[in-house]
Image (tube, rainbow over all chains, first blue to last red; front, side, top):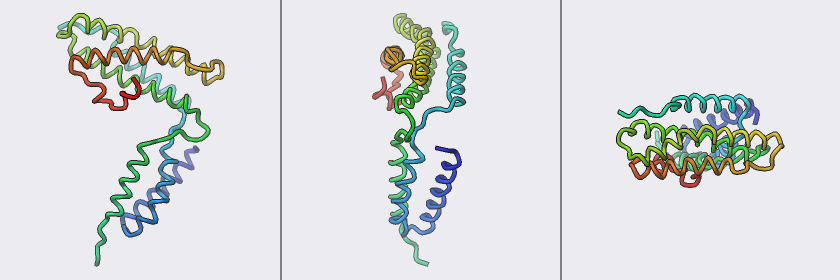
Length: 73
Length: 134
C-alpha cells in the first residue's frame, strides 16, 4: 500500500474517531466504517529493502553485545 | 445540555482494539515472507532476553545450564544468518522453501528458553505469542 494511501486512510480514521467522540450517538454508524478501514491499515506487508537492512543491522549490533562469554563474577 | 453515555464509543474502541490486534497479510504480499521476516525479528527479541538472563546470572547458574546457554550464544548468529540467506533465496525465486534453517533457529531458541525457564526466566510469560512459535 502506498504511503499516500496509508496517510489518507489514517486521516479518515482520525476524523471519524474525533467525530464519534463528539457525537457518541453516531457510533453505530461510524463503527462499520472503521471496522472496514482499520484492518486495511493493520495488514502486514513484506519489509522494504531499507527495513530489511535495518533489521539486519539491529541484529548485528545486538549479537555484538554478546560476542564474548560473560565473565564469571 | 444532555450528555449521552458514551457506551457506543467504548464499544467502538473495543472493536478497534480487537480488530487491529489480528493483522492479516495485505494483498500482493507473500505470507510466507511476511511471517519469516516477523519471525526473524521476534527471534532477536527472544535471543536478547535469553542473553540478558544468561549474562546477569552466569555466576550462579549450574555448569550444564551455562553450557546450554553458551550453545545458544555461539549458535544463534550462524543460525539466524542461515535462515536469512534461505529467505533471500526464496524471495529471489531460487528456492522453493527455507529447508531446515528456520526449524534449526526455532529449536536453538526453544532449547534455550526451556533451560532458562527452569531457572526463573519465563519467556513464554514475557512473550506470550512464543507459545505458538517455539
